[in-house]
Image 1: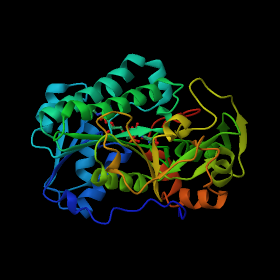
Image 2: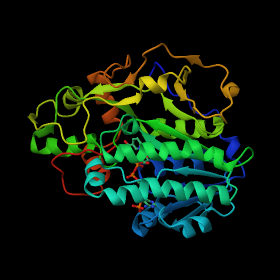
Image 3: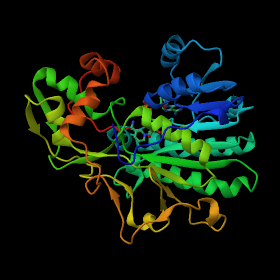
Length: 359
Ligand SMILES: NC(=O)c1ccc[n+]([C@@H]2O[C@H](COP(=O)([O-])OP(=O)(O)OC[C@H]3O[C@@H](n4cnc5c(N)ncnc54)[C@H](OP(=O)(O)O)[C@@H]3O)[C@@H](O)[C@H]2O)c1
């Protein structure tokens, strides 16, 4: 679907053979897709699921019957539990987060505890348990953040970069992956529009709004690829397309009335994946950007092939040369499966929200 800058799939996952992985937040949208890919395409020794809610884990255990899976109930705020879960683990993918912008604004201490202190716990425990590699999921909302969710993700990114200095030369390697909205993930705008169109009325905050878009499958492939390539300290950004919110309305609910509310606190018109200040130490590759750390311990020849970016470069959703047409958006939504059914599963059967602001 995405021809230019298409995210290359990992060639094979042999680097995972015989390894034990731990995925925090593995019962979420990303984690489930990641679990499916790893169990299907690799010979991992074990894949440990780490999250709080037993019901989600129960559903997941029914979905995947694979003896390599282990289910750990635990909170990333709980270091002791993490230490037990990370014992003997080779690689960690840290996806657990509070990611709804309004929920983080309304419960700021909770967002800090999960997204920042949770990241600290992951780092400390990974170093103590001699984990080889840790990759954390971040968001475009971490760039020049205007909401608490983004600010916590920015802090987490900074922690994951500098933790490479804590772990020393042969210690645990830490990197992050930063991308934009995941098409159809829980709490995102597609399930909302699908539900709203049954009432023949969709709500849009501002018609000018643009967003980056990535499919779950692409997100998972990108994380797997970077997990293999990382030296530790990088923030990896995939090249992905953007869409305008009104094109998405046209694709999903062309015959519906559109009610314009107004831009909400913590919401931007356009998202940024690489700021102009970061661009100065970023390298460009055919399908991704690598933001290099600005720390004395970083070896500049880690990434030899990449191109420096031009002065003033900003990777933003409105200035992105790759824009999705209405037709492509329509196909993407259709490929998410039976639409109304998808709408109810993707919102977790939750009551219809008037508006949404998930990541
Ligand atoms: N979805 C997007 O559009 C998007 C875009 C960019 C980046 N991201 C990032 O990608 C990651 C995964 O997103 P997602 O869409 O898969 O999220 P999701 O569907 O909401 O899943 C979140 C997962 O985290 C777990 N979790 C939450 N708090 C936890 C805690 N304190 N301790 C342990 N587990 C906890 C949840 O399970 P329990 O509730 O059972 O604990 C769930 O498994 C997040 O870090 C998010 O910030 C997402």
